Structure formats: structure tokens, C-alpha cells
Length: 307
Image (cartoon, rainbow, N blue to C red; front, side):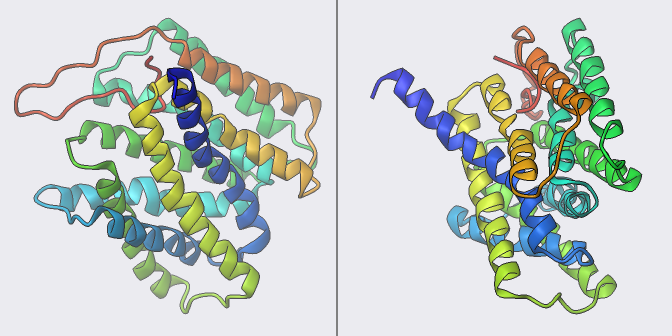
């Protein structure tokens, strides 16, 4: 198999992740109960984590017990709850599109925590992306729920912080193993809170059970495996560009299946968000900072731009 064919194969594998994540908004909004976000998040994280643990067959040791809890809350626990709420409060296309700013937010957070100072091009990308997001949210027909917008943006910030901390604490452990620990930690905390706050689990119909299973297995366990595979075989900038399929999928499903519509300004906002991410992806290559002998490896996060 030629190098071009190999690259395309990994591109297709990686694309499974953002496409499934984009579809999650539609599935959550139309097939899962709106009044059980904690149970919805727990039933997504915990089964996926257990499934990945069966694959990894490895338990955390030492400091990773604490790291797994912190990252589990940021990357999966709080994030999944907020994404669940955003999917119920916002149209599918809007909920997915706001998350398109992830590479920009990642670059901002990586500056103080990883010492990766944004370039002038990154500053332009931030400005363009923010303008696009404002147009996308503010120009919606019928108005956008302010709470939904705030929830979606909060989810974006928390997940970006989790991604940067994951990079800061990165070591030679398998990604499947560390991801399973985070999912289990986040899912266990969600389960305990869901029992106290929301009571018994929501009634499950055939359609909702299928939706829960699809999100846990496909949009979480399988998606993260594909995403990590892409990060191992493709450049971060290539993977980040493939990630644009997330909002694109959300918009397509929202318009095609949910009867949603976009105004001209919103379409322009989407174009600006895409341009912002492409600007970020075109940033010049910068060397990875080499840590001290006893320090953690500092690598550029997947959303930040690095060839």
C-alpha cells in the first residue's frame, strides 16, 4: 500500500470520530429525555470507559488515580452533562457549530499552561472565530436560548482545559488505557450525582436504549479509539482539519432531518468559524519543548496547530 493510500486510510478512520460526535447532538435532542442530563452523561461515559478498559487491560497507578479523576471530570463528566444540556437547549446545528471554536480556545489555554505562545496568525484566527460564533448564535431565526449558548461555550472551555492538561500530564502510557480511566472516573462521579439529584434512571424505550448504546459505543468508545489512531498516524494539523466534520455533521443533520434552517448571516458565521480553524491549522511549525529529565513531556495538543 502506497503512502498516499495509507494516509487516506487513516483519514477515513479518524473521520469516524468527528462525524459521530456531530451526530450525537441530533440523537440526544430527538431520542433521549430532556430532563435527565446527569443520567444521560453517566450512561454515555461509564459503559464506554468499561469497554475501553477491557481492551486496555490496565489499571492506573500512582499519581494517575488523581489525574484520572480531574481529567475525567473535565473531559467527560462535566463536559458530557453540558453537551447533553446544549443538545436539548439549542438546535442541532447551533450546538455542534459552537464547538467548532475548540482549536482556537485550545490555543489560548495552551499559552499559560504549556508555554506555547500564540502567533499573530493565531490572534487573527481568534478574532475571526469569535465574530463567526457571534453571527452564528445571534442571527438565528426565532432567537437562541442564552442559557443554551452559555452551556455550550462552558462545555467548550472545560473540554479544552482538559485536553491541555492531558497533554501536560502525558507520558508513555497507552492512550486507550488513560482514556478508559478518565471515562470510568467521570462516569462513576456522574452516576453517584445522578442517583442523588435525578433519582432513579429514566424510563428506557427501545429507541432511547438504542440511542444510549449508540452514543456510548460508537460516539464515545469507538470514536475516541479512531481519534487516537489518527493522532498517532497523522499530523495534528491534519487531524484538526478532519475535526471540522463535527460541526458540519451537526449542521447537515439539523437541516436535513430536523427541519432546521440557517439564515444568510449564520451561514457566513459558519464560513468564518471554518476560516478561523484553517488559519489556526496553517500556523508555522514550532518545536516541541523538551522537558527536564524528570518532567512531563509537553506536546502540542491535537486542537492546537502543528504540522
